[in-house]
Length: 185
Image (tube, rainbow, N blue to C red; front, side):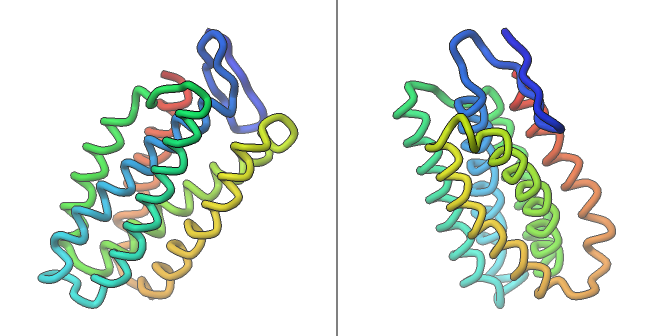
């Protein structure tokens, strides 16, 4: 294994693995986590946040598309899933259940916290890969547009809710930890 570092982006690469390969694997796992979050939140939305059903359907469709795009790129590269794939899925499902039960403001606070971290990481990834991996950079640039939309719509919905003070540090730290693990496993 070799270590790779550029600014805040650190990765442990297996023999023959490029930074772009690792980023695609980690981002694929992250999108799987997002799909699981939105599925769980969507399950509870008719009872706890009926005004969010259409928005959650849209976010879920975006995340399913993102996961499929990263998976297709992994296939093109001859790479498998990240070791953190199932951790992201299980953790995402649990987070989605808890916040889905808590209601609309908790759902919005969760999306804001996750997308803030994801957007920062994707921008770092683009910066690190822009001169060496055009395919990964193109996928990231396209996906980041919808991730920003999720963030911005959720900020508007959140307003001045107390949920962000509670949820943000926990969800942001958990998201950072999963990304950190994925880049090093």
